Image (cartoon, rainbow, N blue to C red; front, side, top):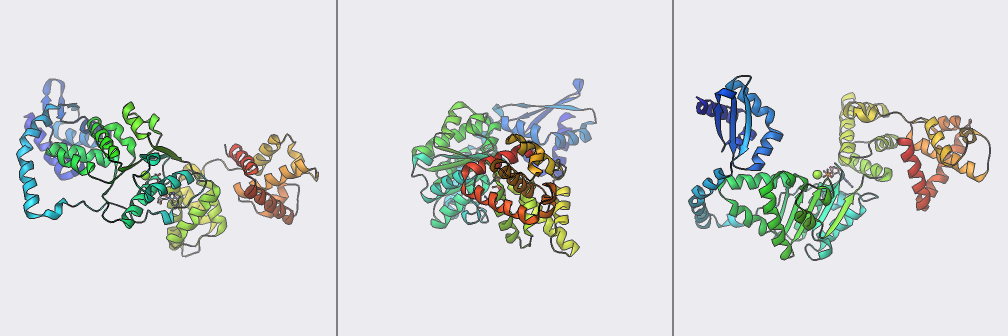
Length: 453
Ligand code: ADP
Ligand code: MG
Protein backbone atom coordinates (compact mmCIF):
# COMPACT_ATOMS: atom_id res chain seq x y z
CA UNK A 1 0.00 0.00 0.00
CA UNK A 2 2.72 2.44 0.93
CA UNK A 3 4.50 2.31 -2.39
CA UNK A 4 1.28 2.84 -4.17
CA UNK A 5 0.42 5.87 -2.07
CA UNK A 6 3.88 7.28 -2.51
CA UNK A 7 3.59 6.92 -6.25
CA UNK A 8 0.25 8.66 -6.14
CA UNK A 9 1.74 11.48 -4.09
CA UNK A 10 4.66 11.81 -6.47
CA UNK A 11 2.37 11.88 -9.48
CA UNK A 12 0.28 14.53 -7.85
CA UNK A 13 3.34 16.61 -7.10
CA UNK A 14 4.54 16.15 -10.65
CA UNK A 15 1.32 17.66 -11.92
CA UNK A 16 0.86 20.38 -9.37
CA UNK A 17 4.26 21.44 -8.19
CA UNK A 18 6.98 20.83 -10.68
CA UNK A 19 9.66 22.56 -8.68
CA UNK A 20 9.08 20.29 -5.74
CA UNK A 21 8.94 17.34 -8.10
CA UNK A 22 12.49 18.03 -9.24
CA UNK A 23 13.62 17.46 -5.67
CA UNK A 24 11.75 14.27 -4.92
CA UNK A 25 11.85 12.66 -8.32
CA UNK A 26 14.63 10.27 -7.39
CA UNK A 27 13.68 9.66 -3.82
CA UNK A 28 12.33 6.55 -2.21
CA UNK A 29 9.80 6.29 0.56
CA UNK A 30 8.72 3.67 3.03
CA UNK A 31 5.57 4.08 5.03
CA UNK A 32 5.56 2.77 8.60
CA UNK A 33 1.93 2.28 9.63
CA UNK A 34 2.72 1.77 13.35
CA UNK A 35 4.00 5.31 13.68
CA UNK A 36 2.00 6.71 10.78
CA UNK A 37 5.28 7.97 9.39
CA UNK A 38 6.65 8.16 5.93
CA UNK A 39 10.41 7.74 5.71
CA UNK A 40 11.68 9.49 2.63
CA UNK A 41 15.19 8.80 1.42
CA UNK A 42 17.10 11.14 -0.85
CA UNK A 43 20.58 10.67 -2.31
CA UNK A 44 22.04 14.03 -1.40
CA UNK A 45 22.28 16.08 1.76
CA UNK A 46 21.50 19.26 -0.09
CA UNK A 47 18.31 17.74 -1.39
CA UNK A 48 17.15 17.07 2.11
CA UNK A 49 18.01 20.59 3.17
CA UNK A 50 16.18 22.10 0.24
CA UNK A 51 13.12 19.97 0.82
CA UNK A 52 13.01 20.95 4.45
CA UNK A 53 13.87 24.59 3.96
CA UNK A 54 11.89 25.40 0.89
CA UNK A 55 9.25 22.80 0.30
CA UNK A 56 8.33 21.48 3.70
CA UNK A 57 4.79 22.88 3.64
CA UNK A 58 4.13 21.87 0.06
CA UNK A 59 5.32 18.37 0.72
CA UNK A 60 3.41 18.10 3.95
CA UNK A 61 0.18 19.22 2.31
CA UNK A 62 0.40 16.71 -0.50
CA UNK A 63 1.27 13.90 1.88
CA UNK A 64 -1.69 14.77 4.07
CA UNK A 65 -3.97 14.62 1.09
CA UNK A 66 -2.63 11.21 0.20
CA UNK A 67 -1.93 9.57 3.56
CA UNK A 68 -4.40 11.44 5.74
CA UNK A 69 -4.11 14.54 7.89
CA UNK A 70 -2.07 13.04 10.73
CA UNK A 71 0.75 11.58 8.70
CA UNK A 72 4.28 12.49 9.71
CA UNK A 73 7.33 12.31 7.56
CA UNK A 74 11.05 12.49 7.84
CA UNK A 75 13.79 12.74 5.30
CA UNK A 76 17.08 10.91 5.46
CA UNK A 77 20.08 10.98 3.20
CA UNK A 78 21.13 7.72 1.62
CA UNK A 79 24.30 8.37 -0.29
CA UNK A 80 24.31 4.85 -1.70
CA UNK A 81 21.39 5.89 -3.82
CA UNK A 82 23.45 8.07 -6.07
CA UNK A 83 26.40 5.72 -5.86
CA UNK A 84 24.26 3.22 -7.69
CA UNK A 85 22.87 5.73 -10.04
CA UNK A 86 26.28 6.92 -11.04
CA UNK A 87 27.33 3.54 -12.36
CA UNK A 88 23.96 2.93 -13.96
CA UNK A 89 24.30 6.12 -15.89
CA UNK A 90 27.87 5.70 -17.05
CA UNK A 91 26.89 4.28 -20.40
CA UNK A 92 24.26 6.92 -20.97
CA UNK A 93 26.91 9.50 -20.63
CA UNK A 94 29.12 8.02 -23.29
CA UNK A 95 26.27 7.83 -25.78
CA UNK A 96 25.28 11.37 -25.06
CA UNK A 97 28.81 12.54 -25.63
CA UNK A 98 29.25 10.77 -28.92
CA UNK A 99 25.93 12.20 -30.04
CA UNK A 100 27.20 15.66 -29.38
CA UNK A 101 30.38 15.00 -31.29
CA UNK A 102 28.64 13.48 -34.28
CA UNK A 103 25.64 15.65 -34.73
CA UNK A 104 26.13 18.97 -33.10
CA UNK A 105 29.68 20.11 -32.68
CA UNK A 106 28.32 23.57 -31.81
CA UNK A 107 26.96 22.16 -28.63
CA UNK A 108 30.49 22.14 -27.32
CA UNK A 109 30.79 25.89 -27.61
CA UNK A 110 30.37 27.79 -24.40
CA UNK A 111 26.86 29.05 -23.91
CA UNK A 112 26.65 32.83 -23.96
CA UNK A 113 26.81 34.07 -20.39
CA UNK A 114 23.49 34.84 -18.75
CA UNK A 115 24.20 38.50 -18.28
CA UNK A 116 21.59 41.11 -17.52
CA UNK A 117 22.43 43.88 -19.93
CA UNK A 118 20.79 46.54 -17.78
CA UNK A 119 23.41 46.04 -15.11
CA UNK A 120 26.44 47.87 -16.46
CA UNK A 121 29.06 50.25 -15.11
CA UNK A 122 27.55 53.16 -17.01
CA UNK A 123 24.45 53.26 -14.86
CA UNK A 124 26.11 52.35 -11.60
CA UNK A 125 26.40 55.55 -9.61
CA UNK A 126 29.43 55.84 -7.41
CA UNK A 127 29.58 57.53 -4.05
CA UNK A 128 30.38 56.96 -0.44
CA UNK A 129 29.54 53.44 0.46
CA UNK A 130 30.31 51.76 -2.83
CA UNK A 131 33.38 53.48 -4.25
CA UNK A 132 35.84 50.76 -3.24
CA UNK A 133 33.69 47.93 -4.49
CA UNK A 134 33.18 49.86 -7.71
CA UNK A 135 36.88 50.57 -8.19
CA UNK A 136 37.83 46.96 -7.55
CA UNK A 137 35.17 45.72 -9.95
CA UNK A 138 36.40 48.10 -12.62
CA UNK A 139 39.95 46.93 -12.13
CA UNK A 140 38.88 43.33 -12.51
CA UNK A 141 36.84 44.08 -15.60
CA UNK A 142 39.79 45.88 -17.19
CA UNK A 143 42.25 43.07 -16.60
CA UNK A 144 40.54 39.92 -15.42
CA UNK A 145 42.77 37.43 -13.72
CA UNK A 146 45.82 39.55 -14.19
CA UNK A 147 46.33 40.86 -10.72
CA UNK A 148 46.78 38.62 -7.72
CA UNK A 149 45.69 41.59 -5.68
CA UNK A 150 42.19 41.39 -7.10
CA UNK A 151 41.83 37.70 -7.57
CA UNK A 152 39.58 36.44 -6.18
CA UNK A 153 37.48 39.51 -5.62
CA UNK A 154 34.98 39.15 -2.83
CA UNK A 155 32.23 41.78 -2.55
CA UNK A 156 29.95 41.76 0.43
CA UNK A 157 27.18 43.95 1.79
CA UNK A 158 23.52 44.23 2.68
CA UNK A 159 20.52 43.55 0.51
CA UNK A 160 19.84 45.79 -2.46
CA UNK A 161 23.11 47.68 -2.38
CA UNK A 162 24.39 46.81 -5.84
CA UNK A 163 26.38 43.58 -5.48
CA UNK A 164 24.58 41.80 -8.27
CA UNK A 165 24.77 44.96 -10.34
CA UNK A 166 28.57 45.07 -10.04
CA UNK A 167 28.93 41.38 -10.77
CA UNK A 168 26.97 41.70 -13.99
CA UNK A 169 28.75 44.94 -14.84
CA UNK A 170 32.06 43.06 -14.70
CA UNK A 171 30.66 40.32 -16.91
CA UNK A 172 29.14 42.77 -19.36
CA UNK A 173 32.32 44.82 -19.63
CA UNK A 174 34.47 41.77 -20.29
CA UNK A 175 31.96 40.35 -22.73
CA UNK A 176 31.71 43.64 -24.63
CA UNK A 177 35.47 43.74 -25.05
CA UNK A 178 35.86 40.09 -25.82
CA UNK A 179 32.78 38.12 -26.89
CA UNK A 180 34.86 34.96 -27.01
CA UNK A 181 35.77 35.10 -23.37
CA UNK A 182 34.32 32.21 -21.47
CA UNK A 183 32.30 33.82 -18.73
CA UNK A 184 30.14 31.99 -16.28
CA UNK A 185 27.82 34.08 -14.19
CA UNK A 186 25.54 32.32 -11.78
CA UNK A 187 24.34 32.31 -8.22
CA UNK A 188 25.57 29.89 -5.61
CA UNK A 189 22.02 28.62 -5.38
CA UNK A 190 21.94 27.77 -9.06
CA UNK A 191 25.41 26.29 -8.79
CA UNK A 192 24.10 23.95 -6.10
CA UNK A 193 20.92 23.10 -7.98
CA UNK A 194 22.87 22.38 -11.09
CA UNK A 195 25.37 20.27 -9.22
CA UNK A 196 22.69 18.17 -7.60
CA UNK A 197 20.89 17.76 -10.90
CA UNK A 198 24.06 16.66 -12.67
CA UNK A 199 24.79 14.32 -9.81
CA UNK A 200 21.37 12.75 -10.17
CA UNK A 201 21.81 12.46 -13.89
CA UNK A 202 25.25 10.97 -13.45
CA UNK A 203 26.82 13.84 -15.35
CA UNK A 204 29.06 15.35 -12.73
CA UNK A 205 31.96 15.26 -15.16
CA UNK A 206 30.15 17.63 -17.51
CA UNK A 207 29.57 19.92 -14.62
CA UNK A 208 33.23 19.83 -13.65
CA UNK A 209 34.33 20.42 -17.20
CA UNK A 210 32.05 23.36 -17.65
CA UNK A 211 33.15 25.16 -14.53
CA UNK A 212 36.81 24.39 -14.82
CA UNK A 213 37.05 25.59 -18.40
CA UNK A 214 35.79 29.06 -17.82
CA UNK A 215 37.96 32.16 -18.01
CA UNK A 216 35.91 34.09 -15.52
CA UNK A 217 33.70 32.72 -12.82
CA UNK A 218 31.22 35.15 -11.31
CA UNK A 219 29.20 33.72 -8.46
CA UNK A 220 26.51 35.72 -6.75
CA UNK A 221 25.30 35.21 -3.18
CA UNK A 222 27.98 32.74 -2.20
CA UNK A 223 26.36 32.40 1.24
CA UNK A 224 24.06 29.80 -0.31
CA UNK A 225 27.02 27.45 -0.47
CA UNK A 226 26.51 27.03 3.25
CA UNK A 227 23.73 24.63 2.35
CA UNK A 228 25.44 22.04 0.19
CA UNK A 229 28.36 20.02 1.40
CA UNK A 230 29.33 18.15 -1.72
CA UNK A 231 28.74 21.06 -4.06
CA UNK A 232 30.96 23.06 -1.76
CA UNK A 233 33.64 20.47 -2.12
CA UNK A 234 33.29 20.77 -5.87
CA UNK A 235 33.41 24.53 -5.69
CA UNK A 236 36.59 24.33 -3.66
CA UNK A 237 38.32 22.22 -6.31
CA UNK A 238 37.04 24.38 -9.14
CA UNK A 239 38.26 27.37 -7.25
CA UNK A 240 41.74 25.96 -6.81
CA UNK A 241 42.01 24.92 -10.38
CA UNK A 242 40.89 28.26 -11.74
CA UNK A 243 43.19 30.17 -9.40
CA UNK A 244 46.16 28.11 -10.37
CA UNK A 245 45.45 29.03 -14.00
CA UNK A 246 45.07 32.71 -13.07
CA UNK A 247 41.44 32.75 -14.08
CA UNK A 248 39.41 35.47 -12.48
CA UNK A 249 36.91 34.64 -9.78
CA UNK A 250 34.48 37.12 -8.30
CA UNK A 251 31.99 36.26 -5.60
CA UNK A 252 29.44 38.30 -3.71
CA UNK A 253 27.95 37.63 -0.35
CA UNK A 254 25.75 39.09 2.33
CA UNK A 255 28.54 38.88 4.86
CA UNK A 256 32.31 38.81 5.08
CA UNK A 257 34.08 35.49 4.43
CA UNK A 258 34.83 34.84 8.09
CA UNK A 259 31.17 35.14 8.96
CA UNK A 260 30.08 32.50 6.49
CA UNK A 261 29.49 29.04 7.79
CA UNK A 262 32.00 27.38 5.52
CA UNK A 263 35.09 25.30 6.00
CA UNK A 264 38.06 27.37 7.01
CA UNK A 265 40.00 26.41 3.91
CA UNK A 266 37.20 27.75 1.74
CA UNK A 267 36.91 30.91 3.78
CA UNK A 268 40.60 31.53 3.41
CA UNK A 269 40.48 30.90 -0.33
CA UNK A 270 37.63 33.35 -0.71
CA UNK A 271 39.49 36.03 1.15
CA UNK A 272 42.88 35.39 -0.43
CA UNK A 273 42.54 38.26 -2.92
CA UNK A 274 40.62 41.42 -2.25
CA UNK A 275 37.65 41.65 0.08
CA UNK A 276 35.57 44.82 -0.29
CA UNK A 277 32.32 45.81 1.27
CA UNK A 278 29.43 47.90 0.03
CA UNK A 279 27.91 50.18 2.61
CA UNK A 280 24.48 51.77 2.28
CA UNK A 281 24.63 54.90 0.12
CA UNK A 282 24.73 58.26 1.85
CA UNK A 283 22.01 60.82 1.25
CA UNK A 284 23.69 62.42 -1.78
CA UNK A 285 24.12 59.11 -3.50
CA UNK A 286 20.54 58.11 -2.74
CA UNK A 287 19.34 61.32 -4.31
CA UNK A 288 21.49 60.72 -7.38
CA UNK A 289 20.31 57.12 -7.73
CA UNK A 290 16.67 58.12 -7.26
CA UNK A 291 16.96 60.83 -9.91
CA UNK A 292 18.69 58.55 -12.35
CA UNK A 293 16.16 55.79 -11.85
CA UNK A 294 13.23 58.18 -12.20
CA UNK A 295 14.70 59.18 -15.53
CA UNK A 296 15.15 55.55 -16.53
CA UNK A 297 11.50 54.74 -15.91
CA UNK A 298 10.43 58.08 -17.38
CA UNK A 299 8.65 59.63 -14.45
CA UNK A 300 9.03 63.25 -13.40
CA UNK A 301 9.59 63.56 -9.70
CA UNK A 302 9.93 66.95 -7.98
CA UNK A 303 13.09 67.60 -5.99
CA UNK A 304 11.39 67.62 -2.63
CA UNK A 305 9.82 64.27 -3.32
CA UNK A 306 13.19 62.88 -4.35
CA UNK A 307 14.56 64.25 -1.09
CA UNK A 308 11.74 62.71 0.90
CA UNK A 309 12.26 59.30 -0.63
CA UNK A 310 16.01 59.51 -0.28
CA UNK A 311 15.54 60.57 3.30
CA UNK A 312 13.28 57.76 4.27
CA UNK A 313 14.75 54.87 2.33
CA UNK A 314 18.28 54.61 3.54
CA UNK A 315 19.40 51.05 3.39
CA UNK A 316 18.21 49.51 0.20
CA UNK A 317 18.51 50.82 -3.34
CA UNK A 318 16.04 48.22 -4.56
CA UNK A 319 13.40 49.67 -2.23
CA UNK A 320 14.24 53.14 -3.45
CA UNK A 321 13.57 52.02 -7.00
CA UNK A 322 10.47 50.08 -6.00
CA UNK A 323 8.93 53.18 -4.44
CA UNK A 324 9.62 55.22 -7.55
CA UNK A 325 7.87 52.61 -9.66
CA UNK A 326 4.88 52.63 -7.31
CA UNK A 327 4.77 56.42 -7.37
CA UNK A 328 4.78 56.38 -11.13
CA UNK A 329 1.88 53.95 -11.27
CA UNK A 330 -0.12 55.83 -8.65
CA UNK A 331 0.36 59.14 -10.44
CA UNK A 332 -0.68 57.56 -13.71
CA UNK A 333 -3.79 56.09 -12.13
CA UNK A 334 -4.69 59.44 -10.60
CA UNK A 335 -3.84 61.16 -13.87
CA UNK A 336 -1.77 63.72 -11.98
CA UNK A 337 1.81 64.80 -11.64
CA UNK A 338 3.83 63.16 -8.91
CA UNK A 339 3.16 64.92 -5.63
CA UNK A 340 4.44 64.58 -2.10
CA UNK A 341 1.09 63.08 -1.05
CA UNK A 342 1.43 60.35 -3.62
CA UNK A 343 4.97 59.65 -2.51
CA UNK A 344 3.97 59.41 1.15
CA UNK A 345 1.06 57.17 0.23
CA UNK A 346 3.37 54.93 -1.79
CA UNK A 347 5.79 54.62 1.11
CA UNK A 348 2.92 53.90 3.47
CA UNK A 349 1.62 51.10 1.25
CA UNK A 350 4.90 49.55 0.21
CA UNK A 351 7.15 50.16 3.17
CA UNK A 352 4.85 50.52 6.16
CA UNK A 353 7.69 49.93 8.60
CA UNK A 354 9.46 53.00 7.24
CA UNK A 355 6.33 55.11 7.08
CA UNK A 356 5.55 54.27 10.67
CA UNK A 357 9.03 55.00 11.87
CA UNK A 358 8.79 57.77 14.34
CA UNK A 359 8.58 61.13 12.75
CA UNK A 360 11.56 63.30 13.42
CA UNK A 361 10.55 66.52 15.09
CA UNK A 362 12.33 69.85 15.13
CA UNK A 363 12.29 69.55 18.86
CA UNK A 364 14.26 66.31 18.78
CA UNK A 365 16.77 67.83 16.39
CA UNK A 366 17.26 70.84 18.61
CA UNK A 367 17.74 68.70 21.68
CA UNK A 368 20.41 66.50 20.10
CA UNK A 369 22.30 69.42 18.58
CA UNK A 370 22.16 71.44 21.79
CA UNK A 371 23.41 68.52 23.80
CA UNK A 372 26.23 67.85 21.37
CA UNK A 373 27.45 71.44 21.65
CA UNK A 374 26.79 71.74 25.37
CA UNK A 375 24.16 74.41 24.92
CA UNK A 376 20.65 74.93 26.19
CA UNK A 377 17.86 74.19 23.76
CA UNK A 378 16.64 77.76 24.16
CA UNK A 379 20.01 79.06 22.98
CA UNK A 380 19.19 77.73 19.54
CA UNK A 381 16.04 79.83 19.40
CA UNK A 382 17.62 82.90 20.91
CA UNK A 383 19.11 85.90 19.22
CA UNK A 384 22.53 85.17 20.68
CA UNK A 385 25.28 85.40 18.14
CA UNK A 386 28.53 83.95 19.50
CA UNK A 387 30.20 81.73 16.86
CA UNK A 388 29.51 78.43 18.58
CA UNK A 389 25.83 79.13 19.16
CA UNK A 390 25.30 80.53 15.69
CA UNK A 391 26.94 77.52 14.06
CA UNK A 392 25.01 75.02 16.18
CA UNK A 393 21.79 76.86 15.31
CA UNK A 394 22.62 76.81 11.62
CA UNK A 395 23.48 73.12 11.71
CA UNK A 396 20.19 72.39 13.45
CA UNK A 397 18.32 74.34 10.76
CA UNK A 398 20.19 72.47 8.06
CA UNK A 399 19.32 69.14 9.62
CA UNK A 400 15.67 70.17 9.97
CA UNK A 401 15.62 71.03 6.35
CA UNK A 402 17.03 67.60 5.46
CA UNK A 403 15.17 65.39 7.89
CA UNK A 404 11.74 67.02 8.07
CA UNK A 405 9.17 68.30 5.63
CA UNK A 406 9.17 71.77 7.11
CA UNK A 407 9.45 74.80 4.90
CA UNK A 408 12.02 77.53 5.41
CA UNK A 409 9.34 79.67 6.96
CA UNK A 410 8.28 76.93 9.33
CA UNK A 411 11.85 76.20 10.30
CA UNK A 412 12.45 79.91 10.91
CA UNK A 413 9.42 79.89 13.11
CA UNK A 414 10.78 77.02 15.16
CA UNK A 415 14.05 78.85 15.73
CA UNK A 416 12.58 81.87 17.36
CA UNK A 417 10.65 83.28 14.46
CA UNK A 418 13.56 84.01 12.22
CA UNK A 419 13.10 85.19 8.67
CA UNK A 420 13.16 82.55 5.96
CA UNK A 421 16.14 84.33 4.34
CA UNK A 422 18.06 83.77 7.56
CA UNK A 423 17.28 80.09 7.31
CA UNK A 424 18.33 80.09 3.68
CA UNK A 425 21.61 81.75 4.55
CA UNK A 426 22.20 79.13 7.25
CA UNK A 427 21.49 76.31 4.84
CA UNK A 428 23.87 77.69 2.23
CA UNK A 429 26.61 78.15 4.72
CA UNK A 430 26.33 74.66 6.20
CA UNK A 431 25.93 73.07 2.81
CA UNK A 432 29.20 74.61 1.67
CA UNK A 433 30.97 73.57 4.83
CA UNK A 434 29.72 70.01 4.42
CA UNK A 435 30.99 69.97 0.87
CA UNK A 436 34.37 71.46 1.62
CA UNK A 437 35.21 70.05 4.99
CA UNK A 438 35.26 66.29 5.56
CA UNK A 439 35.48 66.70 9.30
CA UNK A 440 32.56 69.04 9.41
CA UNK A 441 30.54 66.65 7.26
CA UNK A 442 31.38 63.84 9.67
CA UNK A 443 30.03 65.90 12.56
CA UNK A 444 26.80 66.60 10.74
CA UNK A 445 26.48 62.94 9.76
CA UNK A 446 27.03 61.94 13.35
CA UNK A 447 24.31 64.34 14.53
CA UNK A 448 21.93 63.02 11.91
CA UNK A 449 22.67 59.50 13.05
CA UNK A 450 21.93 60.34 16.68
CA UNK A 451 18.72 62.13 15.74
CA UNK A 452 17.51 59.29 13.52
CA UNK A 453 17.95 56.72 16.26
P1 ADP B 1 22.24 43.32 -4.23
O1 ADP B 1 22.72 42.30 -5.19
O2 ADP B 1 23.35 43.95 -3.43
O3 ADP B 1 21.12 42.85 -3.35
P2 ADP B 1 21.41 44.68 -6.63
O4 ADP B 1 22.70 44.72 -7.35
O5 ADP B 1 20.41 43.71 -7.10
O6 ADP B 1 21.63 44.54 -5.05
O7 ADP B 1 20.79 46.15 -6.65
C1 ADP B 1 19.42 46.40 -6.43
C2 ADP B 1 18.94 47.43 -7.40
O8 ADP B 1 19.55 48.67 -7.12
C3 ADP B 1 19.31 47.10 -8.85
O9 ADP B 1 18.25 47.49 -9.69
C4 ADP B 1 20.53 47.94 -9.10
O10 ADP B 1 20.63 48.30 -10.45
C5 ADP B 1 20.27 49.15 -8.23
N1 ADP B 1 21.49 49.78 -7.72
C6 ADP B 1 22.19 49.42 -6.63
N2 ADP B 1 23.25 50.22 -6.45
C7 ADP B 1 23.22 51.11 -7.46
C8 ADP B 1 24.05 52.21 -7.84
N3 ADP B 1 25.13 52.53 -7.11
N4 ADP B 1 23.72 52.89 -8.95
C9 ADP B 1 22.64 52.56 -9.66
N5 ADP B 1 21.81 51.55 -9.36
C10 ADP B 1 22.09 50.83 -8.27
MG1 MG C 1 22.01 40.37 -5.39
